[in-house]
Amino acid sequence: MNRCGWVNQDPLYIDYHDHEWGVPVHDDRLLFEYLNLEGAQAGLSWYTILKKRENYQRAFDNFEAEKIVLYDDQKIEELLHNDGIVRNRLKINAVIGNAKAYLKVVEEFGSFNSYIWSFVDGKPIINHFKEASEVPASTEISDKLSKDLKKRGFKFVGSTICYAFMQAVGMVNDHIESCEMKRGDGSFASKI
Picture 1: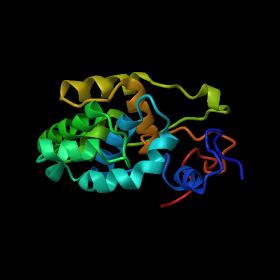
Picture 2: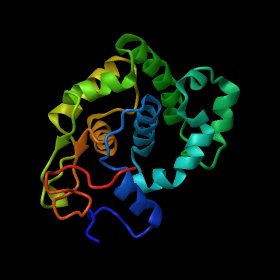
Picture 3: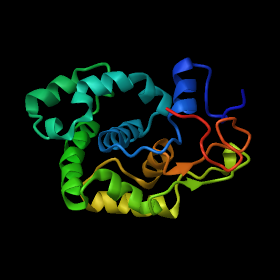
Picture 4: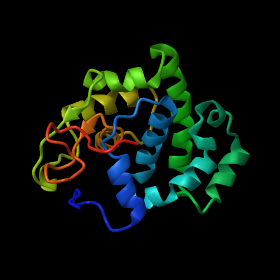
């Protein structure tokens, strides 16, 4: 099967590519999870984080923001000793701060989904790249998203991280044209 060139042979990675990457996500909790996992990736590979994803879900109460905002110093110390996640104090503190910022966004916009998808007018951007080398690391939209998230108190949300997030949650479909996950109209061929 023809897939995007970044996919390795690990069944976990293949499944992620075939069933998640580029599929539009509108669930607030899952959007929050993806945003934090992309932030955890900073300086690392997505494959590294994907392999630790279940550990992250357990460690961070399935990314339930209402629980995360209550984390205290003892919980932070516990996370710093959890070898199932990236044990970086800045990244761990970022998840807690992001949970606080996330709840404020939900209060203001009614949902995180409404806020996030407003950056693409509520519908995916379907790109038609022939080669992986054409796919950008960031765009004007990811720049705007990054700037706005930072203004609202989010951390580890630079433009490159935001673009990877946009790809992951289907705000952008960057499956290359030869990838069998892409339909002729550019939409995603697989369903979760």
